[in-house]
Length: 166
Image (cartoon, rainbow, N blue to C red; front, top):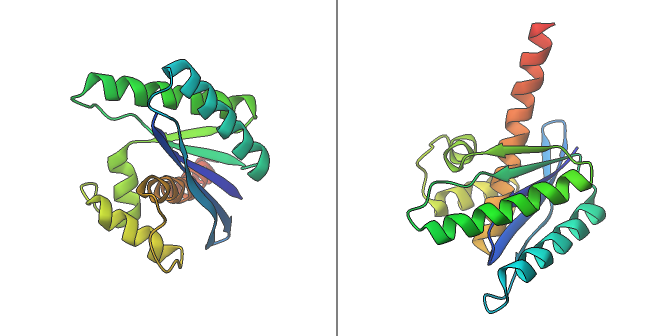
């Protein structure tokens, strides 16, 4: 199973692709999509959409996992992240890829065991769990891999719960 993890943002959107074969996990790709802050928001969102479409076409994930927008004191930042999230949802929907959303605290809890873990702790655990020599850079890429890890753990629990209900 291939999972595309997405850490949405208007300036920087992190992405990470994981392959799961049973309990074995492999990082296939990780990086960031950057848009120029000097461009109009509509142009930046169009660029983000096109780049996400390319990633979806290249890696053909079975599922996508997206970090939900958290409440931010800066309304402008929250709006920009919300717009980027909407673009990611649209790109995945157009590619026929189911999307699952997770709160930042749920991702931290799944990856580190603590919903209040510091960002550098999450990045270190991601690197260790995936057998990487260092945390992926930029931090947004490591965050996207963390979202994908969270999803894979949650997917196992969802499958077990569904089987128990039968």
